[in-house]
Amino acid sequence: MNLLSSRPDIASSKRSPQYNSVENTTVWVIQDTYEGQNFFDTFVFYTGTDPTNGMVTFVDQQTAFSNGLAYVTSSDKVIMKGDNTTWLPAGVNRSSVRISSQAMYNTGLFVLDLDMAPWGCGVWPAFWTLGSGAWPWNGEIDIIEGVHDNEHNQVTWHTAPDNLQCNAFINNNAGCGITEWSRASYGPYFDSQGGGVFAMKWDTNGIAVWSFYRAAIPQDIIQGLPDPSNWGEPVAELAPSSCDITQYFANHSIVFDITFCGDWAGNSYATSGCPGTCADILMDPSHFVNASWIINSLKVYKSATLLGGSSEAASRHFISVLTILWIAAVVATLQTLLSAL
Image 1 (spheres, helix red, strand yellow):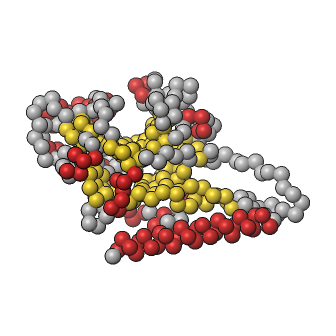
Image 2 (spheres, one colour):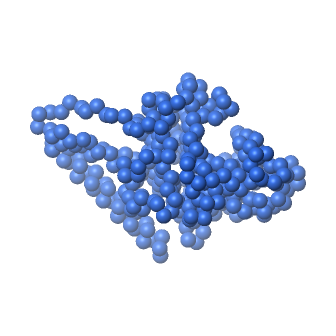
Image 3 (cartoon, rainbow, N blue to C red):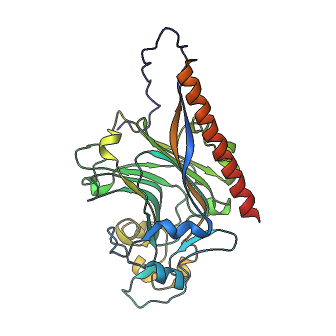
């Protein structure tokens, strides 16, 4: 399975005689920002049953806000959590949150800055994108996912059965999974380092994921001008030679959720080192004090192309994109200043 791959060479296009032989450049400009007091305004709270068979009840927005399962702090930290205060009778599901963005995306650069991702015995969180319509026909991209107090994040792609590499209907829906080598990518150690940034780039060249703990976040991300070409090798990459990206991934919403037990956390519980059974620990709320997302921001960028060469059209395009980048930098600066007030 050839998942990890460098970007394929791009054939140069035919150029006119007066056009200098200079490569085109891709830059990323801000499309959507999810942060602060307005974070939940453009998300929908899911209240259906858990398709992964978790012992969870996903609550609606009003219940989540009323019960303190979703809120934004005075310092603009976005909190989503599983219920960690209620003792439950045996066999009763624990309340939690699952949200999906109203916006759908086809390609983009998704940059999540967070102080904490959920973890703990029986806990199964995910930050992912999901295609529209019947699953898995438009694909699924799991950017952050893990169970219990594991230390290594798992990145996974799930696709329709025509793709033999990542077919969601074989191998118990294992898909194409890559486990990060870093123990700072998930769980207690990630949180103790102050969290960090996860970035997913999705374009015709493939789907790639990077993760950075707090002290290692690239300066271009901090400045709001991300440049994946400066980030080194991704921790996981699905190359177009392994999968037709445009065929198997389309119309994706952004999803956050926290479930309990279920197909992964439940089935792996006996070998997790956690006490008792998953059903037993579900009753005691003290086991879920770390089952929380603490998010600073989620930013979605779209690509723009700086045309190479010295033609008049290329120069006009270059100036236009530079103007967009300048505006994006000003907006990012103003947002930082306002958040400090």
